[in-house]
Image (tube, rainbow, N blue to C red; front, side):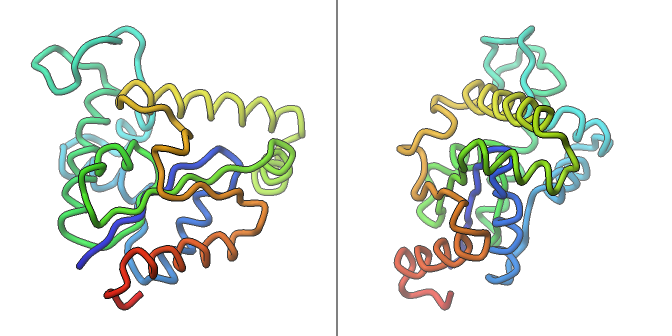
Length: 198
């Protein structure tokens, strides 16, 4: 049986690094930037077009059904194609998928584990300063801006609230460390899928 792990994350929490390490340890594909490449290829969009409209929503078309025949914004077109690719991946392979409402898109799949990675603001700032070469004030502004954008995107395309614990199987504070978070998720997988060789 194939399985999928979706990783929602606060900016600066290390969620992407955890997802990447998890995929390596499990020897499965890791979809973040790679997902955008698949979307571009399957939908016939340029990669630049997909990247510039990734995890965004447009207020102008707020209220239109993304699956209806109404004219869609660029962000909605990209999101719709992403959701198709995510659904296809869940049916064809084991993998780790970062963001893109993947926990919502795959909510009816029994082979999916949904994880949300968060951290205290001071820890997120420290990580942003270290890895993104930002000053503390700028790092805090960036964290608040991107988390607001992610929440807005998620809440717009789903009927759930971003980061709410009831929407995930595991919510993990990354202050315990990247390796420790990864090991914790793998341990959960072993409990969840006892008959699989994980």
